[in-house]
Length: 192
Image (cartoon, rainbow, N blue to C red; front, side):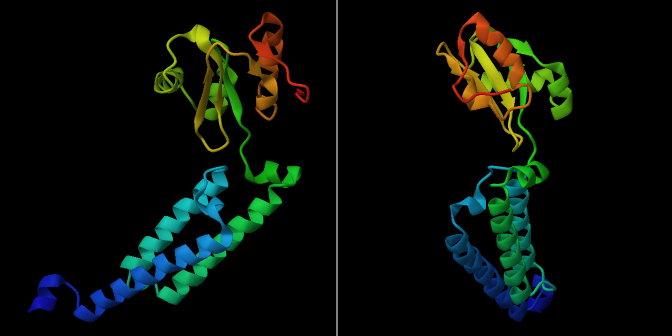
């Protein structure tokens, strides 16, 4: 009677508990081995791996067809791939393959239409990010960057902007041209 009401058996519920605890403990062990970068969002690949971790954990915990040993091995493969790609990203050519390039979407108070289109961002999206960053007026904006992770960084204020911070950003040259107008300082290592 109770099995019919629950839609499952007590044995299956017990297996769900064991699988959930097992996959959770596996994540803890793998994260200790791989380091805190495991859940970072430094690149689009990191984000994809983090989503994969969550999906895999949920599948192993709730699906009777996904066994705990298979889940633990799959989790280990994902952690291994993330570690290998993180090591490979140290090389410029490999990094260009797996990472999106950050894009300058505002240079000072001017929006860069071409990079907005490339990033599939609207001016309304940018204005929302300016408000979120407590930017009170366009004159305070130094730069707005669509980061490789999809996050938007708003650099604003009255301090000088060191262009070296932006040297890896697509469209960096837009700010280099504005550097002559003041409020922007070209770093010693900055290059277009």
